[in-house]
Length: 180
Image (cartoon, rainbow, N blue to C red; front, side, top):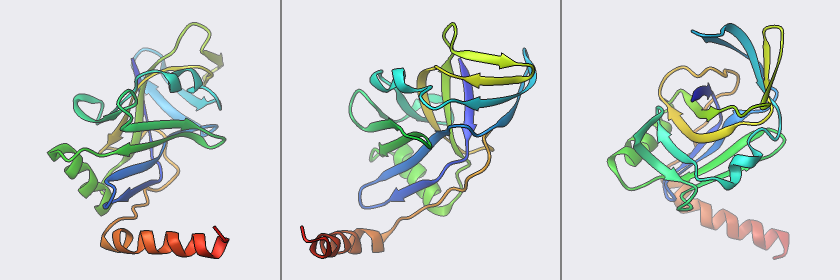
């Protein structure tokens, strides 16, 4: 199984104990150093994760399946694919792992997101030292503490008591303004 990391935008909302953002970005090129293949450049084509959106995928910490944060089967992890990339929303558990992950996200200490996958036959194309992932079997997304393989975006944390208290008020005012 291959693992790739991406620095992504993450929002943590303390009241709902959620992390959301992008686990992978489409069209973003990165350099990969692989002990078997050597150094190469890699991009992910839009739609590469589509078949995996119907599978049971885990949300974990640092690619460690014993550090479970959520999963699609239980509905605590929701995945989507749009023009930007593979989006996610995790309902963090009220466990030491969930609380620690939220605290690190709020402080801005996390490195980003990563994903573990396999490439089925015909799921990638090579042109010289460039690889394009066209279809992958996604097993997990990981909140990572280290430096991601796909740099580019910044982790943005939005959390705390202000969101918890003002969020419902602002939502109600928006609905009143929108005429709902």
